[in-house]
Image 1 (spheres, rainbow, N blue to C red):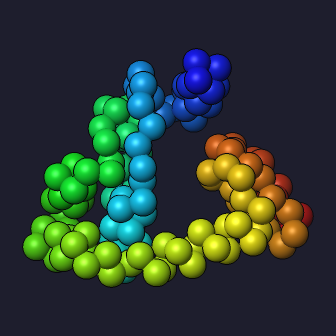
Image 2: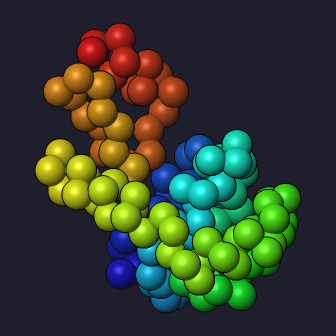
Image 3: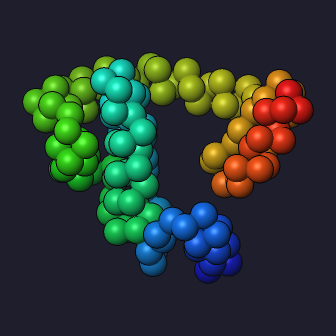
Amino acid sequence: MNKIMNDLKTTAAKFGLDFGNRTMTYNSRLAQEVGLWAQTKGLGHKFHMKVFKAYFVQGLNIGLKDVLIDLIESTGLDIVKGRQIIETRKFSDAVDSDWELSIHRGVTAVPTFFSGNDRLVGAQSYDALKKLILKG
């Protein structure tokens, strides 16, 4: 685990991202569902960045409802609706579909970027992403 964490810290530093000393891995399933809901409200990127910071910088358990509610509130999303999204698991099927597509496409790590039949795995520089897109 130490090599993986050191590699992640090195990559984060390369891109100017904060990265803490996370020692636990938490289930992100509910955060993924809330993230899809946040996208429908035009706040997907903002929510995902807050989840990234909570998980990778602060080491918070993003699988806990209370943590997600705090992230929902800090993103500017409706807390009451957010609780409903969590309780009803309204976006569960959509996340299942995303997972099925990922398995079908052979995704083994996050992020994975696709352009046509080409892919890049892991955090990538702007230049690498530009080359991928121009190649496709």
